[in-house]
Image 1 (spheres, rainbow, N blue to C red):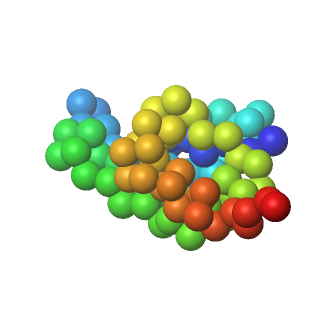
Image 2 (cartoon, one colour):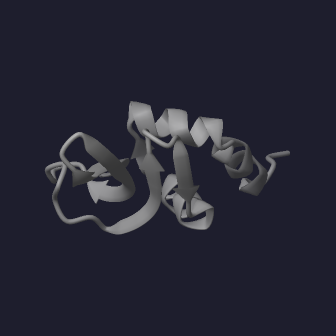
Length: 88
């Protein structure tokens, strides 16, 4: 199973995070499948590669709580609903 979660980078007391698609069994700093975004909580900046994020969400990837909040704030889930075909 794949998850979208934060991977810590940066130096001591100045953490920045990469949003990565990673296997559930991997540790936090383990090898990721793909880097799909960036989050800096100090400057409150985010960069999201929305097409890659939508690809992994459509394939069944589960975001962690914090990543879910970041994606919700960026309205990625609205774009996910727009991409899904309507059922009659």
